[in-house]
Length: 143
Image (cartoon, rainbow, N blue to C red; front, side):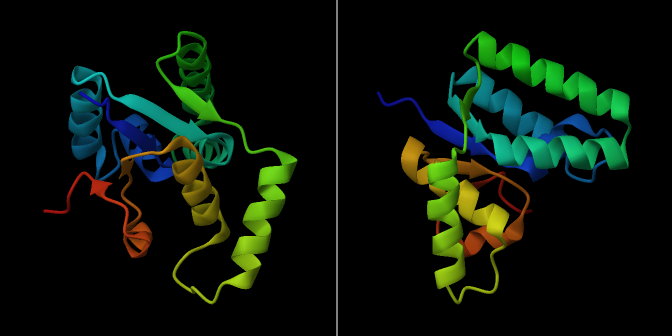
C-alpha cells in the first residue's frame, strides 16, 4: 500500500501552533490523523519562513522560535521532509509565475505547486482557499 504524501502549507502550520486560530482544532485533528497513518509529511523553506514570520507577528517571537526548533528537530529525525528551494528552482518558479495570467494565485503558491510536483504529494494540508484552483485535493475539508 502506498504511503500518502501530504504537503503542509503555512496556513496549516500557523493554525496548528496558534491555539487562538479559528482553524486550530481542525488543524490539530487532521495533523494527528496524518501521524496515525504514518503519512509522509513535506513542506518547503518558503512556507516555513512564512509560518515563522506570521507566528512571530500574531503570537510571539518565543512561539516562533519554539516552532522553528521543533521543525528543525523533526527534519533531523526524518519525521518531516524539507524541500529546499534552490536558486535554480526559484528561477523556474519565478518564470512560471511571470508567464501566467492566473490572478488567484500569489507567488508563494507557485513555490508550493513546485514542491508538490517534485515530491509527488497526494494532498495539500491548507486552509488557504485560493489553492483550490490548482485542482489538488485539500484537507481538511470545509464544513
